[in-house]
Figure 1 (tube, rainbow, N blue to C red):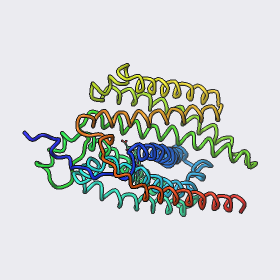
Figure 2: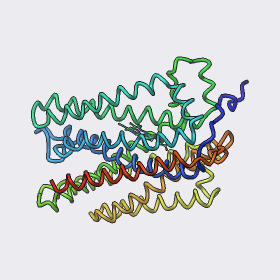
Figure 3: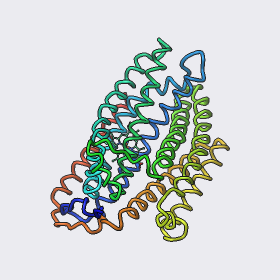
Figure 4: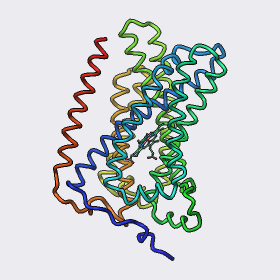
Length: 352
Ligand code: HEM
C-alpha cells in the first residue's frame, strides 16, 4: 500500500512569510464569497420568482436581469484573488487535485463562459419572449450551480491525499470527491448560504431604490428579507450536517477541542441567530451587520478545517521563505494603484 504523503509534491520556497499570503487569501475569499453569493442568490431568486409568477417577469426579476452580468464579472475577478494565494500556499495540494479532476476543472472554464453568455442573453430577452427567457435564466442558474459543484469538489479533494490513490484506477482526469461524507453538506451549505445572502443583497438594493425615490423598492426589501430568512434556516440545517460529517478529530476542535475554533463557532451561531431575529423584525442594517460577522467567522472556521485536514501532511507554516520582498512590494503598489483607479471609476460612474 502506497503512503499518500508520497503523492504530495515538494513545494517551492516563497519570497515572504506565509502569514502575509494567508491574510490576503482570507480577505480575498471573504470578498469572493460575498460577491458570489450575491450573484448566485440573485439568479436563484429571480428564477424562483419567474416560476411562481404566471404573468412573466416581476420587479425583482428586472433588477436581477440588470445585475447578473455585473455580478458574474465581479465574481470571476474576486475569485482570481484567492486562487492566486491558494496556489502560493497550498500549490502542492490544489495543483494535484486539479490534475486528478482535470476534465471537470478545465470544463469549468467552458461552463463559466456559457453562463456568462446566458446572463447577457437573459438581459437582452428580458421583458419579451417569456418562455425562452425563462429557459435561458434556468440554464444560467444550472451553470452557476455546476461551477460551485466543480469548485467544491476541488476544494475538498485537495484536503484528502489518501483519496488521490484512486488515480491509479482512473487516470483520465475525471475523479470527483462526491463520495466523501463532507462533500454534499458542504456544497448544500454553500448554495443555501448564497440563497440567504442573495436575499439580503436584494433587500439592500431595494433600500437603495427607496432612497432614490422609487416606491417599488419597498417590495424588494420585504421579499429579500423573506428569502434571507428561508435561506438561513436551510443553511443552518446543512451547517449542522456538515459539522457532523467532518473527520471526528476536526469536529472535536469546534466542540471544545480548540478555544479559537469553538469561539468562532459560537460567534457564527450567535451571528446567524441575531441575523434571523433582525430579519424577522425587518431591521435591514442590523441584519446585514450580523450576517457579515457570521460569514467572517465561517471563513475563518473553513480555514481551520483545511489546516486540520492537512496538518498530518504539510502546512504553509513549514514553507521556506527567501526574504525577497521585491515582488511582494511590487504587487502591493499595483494593488493600491488598481484600487485607486477603481475608486476613481466608481466616482465617475456615480456622478454620471
Ligand atoms: C459562477 C461562478 C462561481 C461560483 C458559483 C463559485 C462558487 C464558489 C464556492 C461555492 C466556493 C466554496 C467551495 C468550497 O469551499 O467548498 C468557492 C471557492 C473558491 N472560488 Fe469560486 N465560484 C465561482 C467562480 C470562481 C472563479 C472564476 C474563480 C477563479 C478565477 C474562483 C475561485 C475560487 C477559489 C480560489 C475558491 C476557494 C478559496 C479558498 O479555498 O480559500 N471562483 N467558489
